[in-house]
Every structure is written in structure tokens, then in C-alpha cells.
Length: 414
View 1 (tube, rainbow, N blue to C red):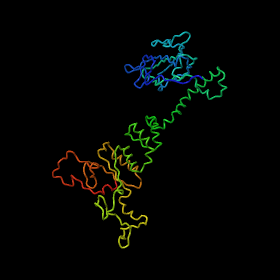
View 2: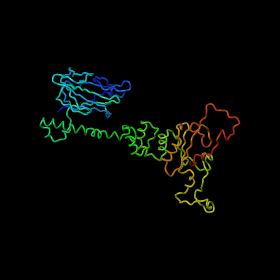
View 3: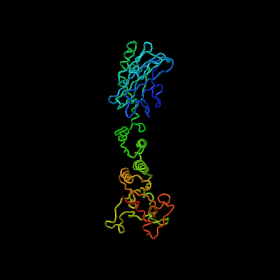
View 4: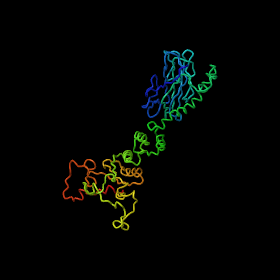
């Protein structure tokens, strides 16, 4: 069976075996016309080769050029020259009117149709292949050639047809070339289908001006892409979206959302988890480790709490719930002011909390500033900062230099 395969001619932004005249290699590895004085030269030429696999003969089949869409008044013409001798070079005169004129024996360059980027190499098996090209411009633009690919062996649509179509060599040759015309049109579609999985991968989904595939992917997941993110951040966060959706409404989820969209490391506390009722026989500090109950344990009690507009009826299974109604379904979010450096960061934090918190809950957003607030902000190393060089304040009233606030502040609604 004839060996089939392909190879590329642009290797790591280099074009080995290419002889370039008035053609440059751009910083990203593209072939472009040389530019002088703000204008492109009108013509550039190249000759490349010899390309060969080994000392045996190779059935050259197809040459494809991957390039930008040609601007108006810009043209490319390709030439091919298969040779059976690795030591002989085909004629080439870069500055001549016809750079690819001349012969080697009875062989000559085969000129391909102008601006055709996908051509068949009409030849029998040979040891080597040479490729030539002419790039033309009116001086205002240039062709931009990204890559070239040479296919060898005839891996065509003929393999999908019944074997009877391959029995006669003459008919096989004609049919392969005829099918190659269809393959050149449908090949790009096949490549698109082959690359379809990368469109749905956040790490490889193409970006660009909106709407890009990366934006479409974010829209399908209902994931808000923040304009302050870099492309790599957008890809990384989008890849975490499905996992993060499973943590919505939880403390861990809120922390991650605030980290992703605002860039802060928030502390989130639920007063109902740390507040306890005042009781005898325990170490209790009113307003710090304990609180006075806002209601009676048993609800309305005849002769005790059954006062008009000051009592409530509860079911037996709900006994005691009223004692925590002022802290139930409430949480406090604490953010260091030093992390809110970006304009609008605090407003963004509120927007994230409004969007992601459970609907039945309320929150208090507390910005931790470099000062000690006894009863509310006074945990050294956590939410209180002791300055290295305190500034002396003479004659400043206590209620100005030091803020004494009750712990209830962190349980108020915003």
C-alpha cells in the first residue's frame, strides 16, 4: 500500500529550505512582502526545496497554503517542480520577468492558477519536490502566508467508494483527481468538524472581538465575564463555572465569587452559629458571648407574655425559634479596606452578594479599616491593626479617636 501523510514547511516560525527575495518573515512567522519607505514592494519571489522523505520515490499529491484573505490588488501564484534527482536544482531567476522559466531535461516548472491556495501536484512518483511562488501587490497591502502543507500519497474519498472503482489504474487516477476537487472544498468543513471539541473547551476556545467563541461559551453557561479579567483569568474561571454553580448560596461559594469578581479575600460569619443565650453557671459576657432573648421560649404564655401586640403563637416543633429570630438567616461579610483599591470595588462586592446570596437571607457588609472597634472590630491580627508608629492625639475626645460600638452592628441589614 502506498504510504500517505503530510508535512508542514513553516517550522516554529522558520521556513527552512526557502530562498526569499523581497519577502520577509514577520515576527509571528508569516511570509510577507518586504516594506520600504512605508510601502510594500510590488513583487517578491521564493524558491523552496528540495523536499524529500528518503531516497525512495514519493507520490506527491497536494500543496495547500494557509493564508489571510487576499486584499484587493494583491495576488499569489504558486509553482511546483517534482524532480527525480536530489542533487539538481530547477532554474530560478528572482529578478527576471519570468522567474520560473527554463527546464531540467524535458521537465519545467508547473504554474498553478493565480490566487489558488489548494493545488494538485500532477506528477508521477519522484524523489524530491521543489516549490516556487510569486507575491504581487500594488504597494498598499501584502499577502500574509501563515503555513504551507504538502500531502503525499492519495488519501482521497476514493477509499469510501466500492472497490470496483479502483481496479483500473487509468480510471483510478482520473477519479482520484476528480474527487480531490470535492475534497478541497469539503476538506475545510471536515477540519472544522474535527476541531469542534476545542470550541467547547475553555482553554482552547477561540477569542477575539465580541461575539467570540469564548464569549458564546460563557453565555451558554450563563457565566458573567468581567471586563477586568485577563483572557487567561476568563478561561480559568469559566472552566470552574460548573463546579462553582454547585456551591452557590454557601459560604465557600460566596467567598469564591467575591474573590473572582472583586479580588478580595472576604471573611463571612453567621451570628446564629456563634451567639448563645445568657445563662447562669457559664462564663458569659453580655453583648459579646451572649445575648438577651428577643422573645419568650414558649411564645405567648398566659399571665406572663400574653400581652397584646407583644406576644406570638408558635407550634410545638418551633419552640425556641423566636429566641434567634434577630440573627437567623443573617450573615456578616468582612472585607479589608486595603483590598478595595479598584474604583467601584465596593459596589461590585454588593452586587455579587445581592446576586449570589440565598433569597431569604440578609447580610451586613463590614469594611475593616485600620482602627480598633471594641465589641465589633477588635480581634488582633484578624480585623484589627496596631500601627507601628502611632500618631499622638492630644485633646481628642474618646468618641472620636476610639470607636466603641456594640456587636449588633454586624447583624444589621444593609
